[in-house]
Image (cartoon, rainbow, N blue to C red):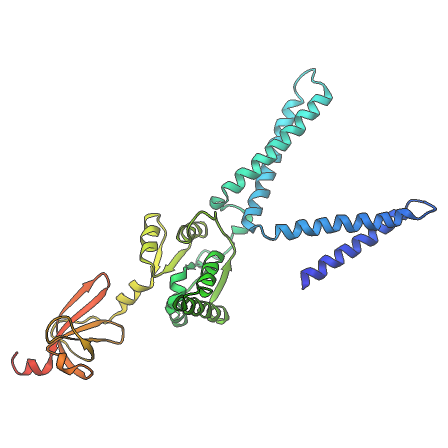
Length: 338
């Protein structure tokens, strides 16, 4: 609404200025005032269209192009000065050579700057003036950890602090999941959007949508790794494949699943615990229960007690890629000498 008002005001003022400039001519028919209005509206409308088109260009890409243009003008200034040193050079030919050289250098400077914008870190928008004893950690969220939802609890406990960044391409992927025809994917996507809204509304959390994007032929995981390199940030995820790819390229990964495994209480053989047996196990007489953190407990001899809460003794603990498994036996069997 504000941009629309400013644009309309700019066109109106341009029309008034055009009318005033047109009336500067002493024409009895007063046609120049009307011509001035038409020219003013036309030029201002063209400028508004150009401005609207530039709104789709990323700030980093636009800044890189401007930097390339300025650098090209500096180089062309030096080279055109060298042309003036050529003896007996026709003035018209020299001017033509200078003009062609400036155009070519400006084009090449802008193109090369745009192609290298992903590694173009020393430009004004990315210069940060901050205290030397205080670092602003950038934490980039991927789609999987947003849908998972535990990131909200982690942020609220304040164990993880920094500036949380959600790239626009991740938000786009999340919206595609929320619009999926599959009911399960649609619910997961909507849950992710709800998590983002809660993060954004929490005043204690520094949250930002990052508009920067990369080439369309790159996958979302590749874009996340490149953005983490550009911003010098860390990627928060629970995606195993992204974890490995990022580690190979030297990007720090914060894996929520690793954090969960690290926070699980340590259980030693011989300890007693209480667990509800929820289903039968694979082996004869075995039953399976789960602790509050999701750890599977396999109880030998507990099949007949499925659905009940029992006291068991831990016999061994097995750590697997999928998580931790606890093997136990019934306390009553221990007392009976089994």
